[in-house]
Image 1 (cartoon, rainbow, N blue to C red):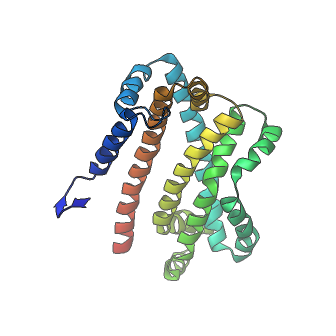
Image 2: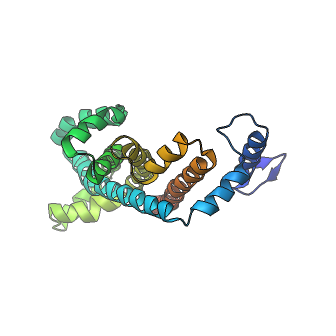
Image 3: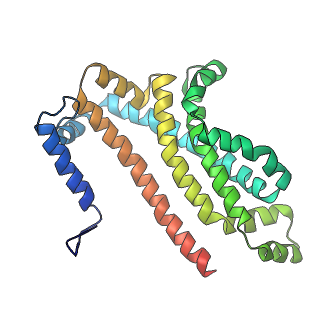
Length: 250
């Protein structure tokens, strides 16, 4: 960020918004926005409690299992769609429908099909993340230079060899971009699942704190959730930039 010709560190904008948050909180503008200093103090007070650690464990488990399922299913499906025209025409309309549809409306259906436990929450998380992963993997495969495929075949590569050694690697920048966006969407999915399907994890804490007007605790948990998503997203963005650089060189 540049102000009056002076280049400031990348985190300067966060400091600026933190000061604005502190000012708004201390002005008494709204009961629902406490000062940032109070939120940070509350965060350090609750972060080591058994209730918080248990909620963090449940949310992290549902999140990572849902993302893992989305990656394991979404990348191969996207690559196959990019390779096979018939499969692409069969699946692409459904992928676009689920990507653009309000998936929250499907939660009651998932509750009927899979119950009210952790399995339904993981499936909800997967559904929020998988569609963008499929589309990005498909886009990456469709941009592969055809000469790479012809070269692999001329050296006797089997379809399985081509899948893992050509398609996956050549489309890796787009695949990583889809995974990064999918992870951001998965954060929404896991919280929606924990609020609507089974009141556990961070969803239970949000419910408890909002019902009792403990807004400092509410924002403290929300900051942890945002920090988790932001950290994972930035790590993948860094990896994506490195892979894109080497892919361009190649």
